[in-house]
Image 1: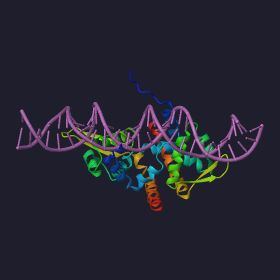
Image 2 (image 1 turned 90 degrees about the horizontal axis):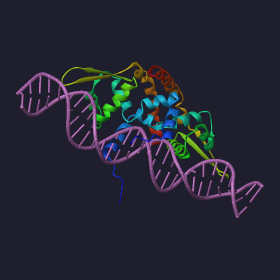
Image 3 (image 1 turned 180 degrees about the vertical axis):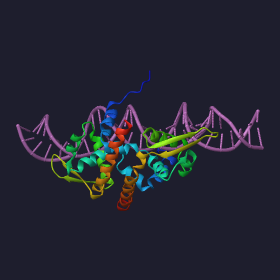
Image 4 (image 1 turned 45 degrees about the horizontal axis):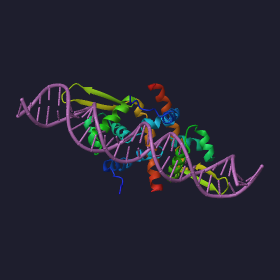
Length: 118
Length: 118
DNA sequence: CCCATTACTTACACTTTTGTTAGTACCCCA
DNA sequence: TGGGGTACTAACAAAAGTGTAAGTAATGGG
């Protein structure tokens, strides 16, 4: 009972869309926090708590969710140290580091666009 | 009565996030259909109905919404011809065309990533 | 024994995004 | 008069994304 009704158009559209490598790529870094997290990690490893401090209003839940998704997608490597209290470090994978130059260009585009439109 | 309660954290986080030029840029092309639409328009002007045919399962509503958003953001130019039945043509602006090389790289990244992860 | 610390997890609520269905205006043509 | 064609629009509903509030495990230190 209570199995979620699978909205077929919603789902099949999603599949159709992600066939495009470009959309696929943008989806990997979509969402509210992923890009910001990746940007911070470009400077090196960080602990969960350190990341949290970087973003004044992020909730632990959101940070966890985003990091998990990034890990799942092979963009972030998570290392747990068996200590108490726990210590967990996050760092970018090569795949994520490859975004570097692309991010640079996108960022420039964003800057220019913002000036033109606003 | 019934004014929507403005969730302040939701909204203020949104503002905070978009201060980043990179996130700002990605937001402009985020959403389910925008990238695909831009990709099609890279080949030249298209009418509403032509665009619709390109995407088998998009609804008219979604296509309209996305085109409106792109227009609003200065990525697409909309030209209405005063005919009956109506004719409306969409084309990319320079700002959108500037995405070209970036899209190329993102797309390559997507292709590589897909092979690695799946 | 109790508390602090860290990195989470859970259940719930709100907001935005996406899709469904039906309908509109306009004029030409039969 | 009435249907066809085009590019929409409106009211509603489903789904995903994001935020709230509270709680957990484990252990060292007081």
